[in-house]
Length: 84
Image (cartoon, rainbow, N blue to C red; front, side, top):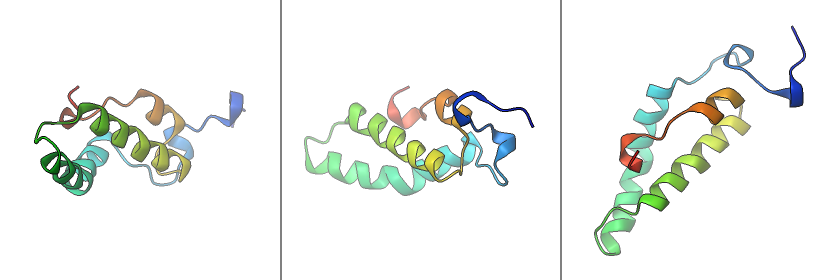
């Protein structure tokens, strides 16, 4: 195996990697309901920055836990529920 700069992990370096579609489905079904409750208690409007930050924080934790690779973390797009 070739050494990668900064210890970069690629999907092939992780035994069982989560795919983008799986991550989006989990985010939509498990995380977004809590966000929608918070939004409803506020002004009832989507809080796009909170949604995007939640996605970023969650995918960061997936990367640190080696569920997704550094490449996936850096290259995945936000799900539609984040306004992207």
